[in-house]
Image (cartoon, rainbow, N blue to C red; front, side, top):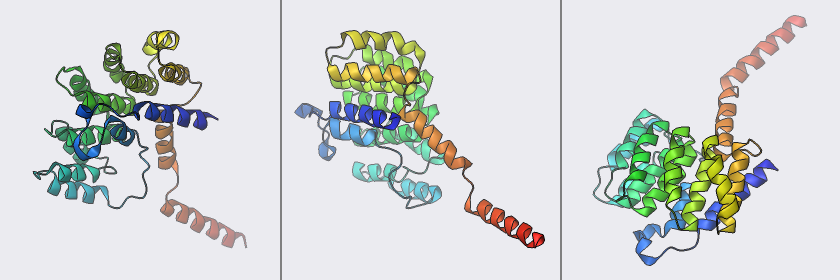
Length: 252
């Protein structure tokens, strides 16, 4: 039941963002805000790893200085599964890339990596007036995915100035993911007063996440990662089977 409600909540945010934005908001071949937002909020479980983290970083370094921004985007794609210091250093640098496609990709991957050291830089970018709206949208989504409480205030400040329901929905969803009780009063106001039924519903679900009634995407990702780390490796299982075999032979 929890997973179903969580999936519906995430689907609601994506649906909220899916309406095309004005033509001036388009960013080349990557399409409008809605398409990029769906990319930003994808699960980190995107299929089998094709390369080791070391190989991914090595290949990314070869592409990241290319003059073609599409090649630089491809370089950052290499780092989806390379969640290590070298990869995150590249991603942090590319937040300042002059091409919005590269900038947005770096933000998305840092969010997927749940890289907490990126929160101060993201918060500053969100504060700046000259940061494009599309970048701010992805920054908010990434802060939600990272889930650090230090990201709560920047998202709250962003939410305060938004007249567009899609932007408010993104911020509300992020607040639920961050889970800081300091957002409860604001979310309660949104439940009672926001003109968008979708945003009101997202605020209700955000409150439920903060209260622990339903899990957040962030908490489930952390739990999945902990379970993965706690699972016995193949070598450990082999040793356990070998020991069990010896015990059985001794008993015979």
